[in-house]
Image 1 (cartoon, rainbow, N blue to C red):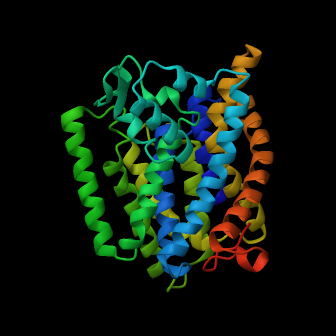
Image 2 (cartoon, one colour):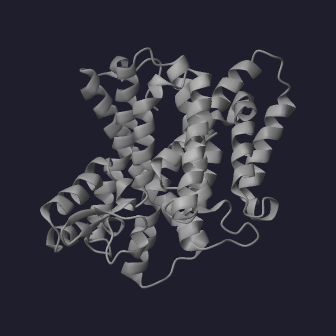
Length: 357
């Protein structure tokens, strides 16, 4: 599923750099983010059911994977930002804010948690204040985050903390999905269905993780039967085609696409990748770094050169920048795993069946 992840990440790039001929922005940033949540729910249900024997081993593995890439991307953003447009650290320290607002902004930048709350609070003259629309405030925390899309990681981390308590139970997952959907509809009625309520409100997004986890349990039932290869191939082609040509096939209706993602995932996963497995794995690995740094690349390149990036060049430049950062992040992840487990060497790099890539 690495190619699917990478296509989702490229969709986010296109939402910030502009459309390509024929395929436009593919599924765009909003749908890509929520589709990532479905994928995450699927894979977390899988690893919690089939790999991790304890919650602590799961938490350690997720911490190492998420924060190794994030901190490398954050360091790169701070370094490049000193010469480009993202001079955010100095802006926070010099801002006419209360101490609580500055500490909140700094903490969220470094530790991810709280990045999602930035969409629902703002640094008022008297301190941190709640807002129903951060876009309408004179200043927002959102502008003071090196990796602005980290709010999605904060939602992911919240799901990871809760996942061991319910992803193995199908009834619980259906209840969570129903409650989350109800919260989404109520928030639409009260606050409207625009940004930030359409894809940033954590309780509304939790249902998409649950949907992905339900898809995993469906896969467990499906793989007991003799699944024909064409079924998996058809599901994979449907996912790729739906992502590439979303604007032509779905006419901007989001939920049919989410149903496609959840419905195709079990068959596409069982299909495997065969001789392309290593390439697919690399695509999955680089997709996270691509997602993290794409705004950093676009903003700072345009600031330093005074040239607006074309969509194609934005994709190529982000991919090129992601490769060395990914190599560093993987080394850092190995160090973190050894440090959190309490030892070094290849044998210590395993956590309940998950090995370092």
